[in-house]
Image 1: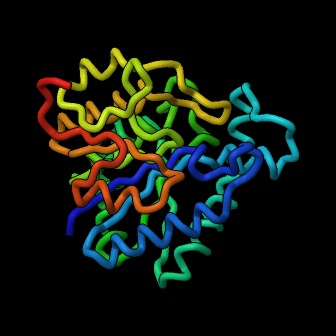
Image 2: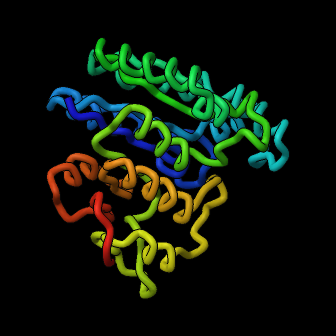
Length: 253
């Protein structure tokens, strides 16, 4: 079975105002992923939004900027994030599992092998792994900084065929604001990066391109898609004109 790593940003999973998680998004996305599973794909999710969920649970007016505050929000929000995933996938007779990682886990040969074995076992039994950075215990020098980089690490670890990054924009845009349909030379794509981070975002387009560069170098095709639009994942896998696609070889844009 082909493996897909799907990264879901906070902007994809929260309401437009970013004040709470959007249950309708979980319902739609779980249905689409269930269809992919039925079609013969094994799906691994790398999901943000634990901190965003924690902000509401802790009755804060805004997202903390200090590390202890972020870690506390992550600890409070992770159970709610997993509850929404578990509830949504249960409707399709699918189970989920939580896996929290730090950069140290990926960097350690023993921890990396343990994580790979865990993923293989979960996928073999049809369970959908949901991975997030272990924000509650990671310190600054060990943090991935965003789940874009983590998704690339997971894609390489799992020997995935595809990395799909779902975000709140319609792929990479050129200097005129038009969608770039396909990127052959990722080095040139970095020149198109603008400051596009939202209030709830940690990364931006630059970190997405860095993630894709790592995945591509490992022979993994990649896509940046608008996660607020229905049917984008299936369409990209069928080669349709959605978002921005990144073939394995890069020569020109």
